[in-house]
Length: 186
Image (cartoon, rainbow, N blue to C red; front, side, top):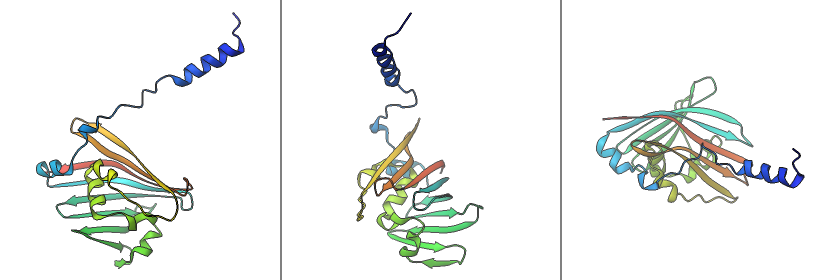
């Protein structure tokens, strides 16, 4: 049996349109809310990784904890040594160079994570707890173009932020925050 060129192209088109089983429909009504989580749990701890691609290529694993009005994120270098910490207390964000054990200004921390000056205390707390509602409120004021995308992870408790991707300058510089695990403690 001989297949014409037009039939072959049509079959190729159909195979490209086949559904991808890795995509699932997310019911946004099941997104977790930080207020409900805090009624049930006193804190969240976990791990993740911050990746930078483009001008700066790096991968920095991190650990985090959020409890009440305080949160922290500790970033590590490629050898696993603690490098930087974002310390959040109420509405105050401090950046600490853990190697020199001193607080640094936001401009110095921006060499590591350039959009950090655009992120609020509430943003950090929400992403640590996994609440995606903060993504609707995020406003990044940059001279260049940017886009923010996210992936959610669903389980019996609801939909949690799994990954946030910041694409700057038409994707010439991309930063992603990926959460590997979250443990909620009573």
